Image (cartoon, rainbow, N blue to C red):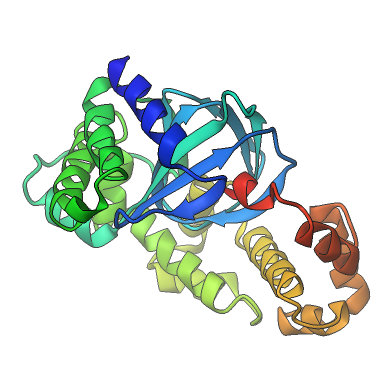
Length: 297
């Protein structure tokens, strides 16, 4: 497709290595010139259009493979493991990531015909058609003319959201923007878990916060995140611990206590199970890994 070819050309010129916020508001570019090792990260609500190369992302027990010409929608804060599987200096992995604002989607919903609510989903991959690639291309062209971005970026972003709402991803986008949707209810619990990851958790309290029965909450939480609330909390705790260790936040035992673990041995054991290395050695190795940032995008 011509739009995909031009997107590739623009990103080859203007996307630096790694995951970099561009001068276009809300637009992040991702570039990797080689396959990367699996990296754990928290994906926040976004639409990501893969322009070239391929990547694999694991969410709980679900596996998602996507490549150039496809896009993914992330509708909640999700702890995932991802790595670039196809990239080279001549044909790098290239991706455009655009943050999704529930408020903007809610405003647009006022001008879009109502539709039945589908089941909540946190992560989906679909083919990017011309209707979606054209507004994405207009956004990417602003990488060459950032002085025009304050006026034109919002117009292109609104059209892109409209195309998503009226296309196959419409049910997911609608749930992001609708305050009373099942996804929005689950997101209340997710936001609490992210903000209070070090605190003791009662699933009954989370269900009350979401406004659901306990059985309904368990079902919908698993549908969105592919894990239980306890598994989600553990992933968030360990990823926060990794961030603190990478930033030089102190010894592993102290960091473990800071993120909510009572036992240093349990913290070290679960950290190693998730990341493959003991806490201190893992942080030391990642500080010298140039592919770490690219693998997160």
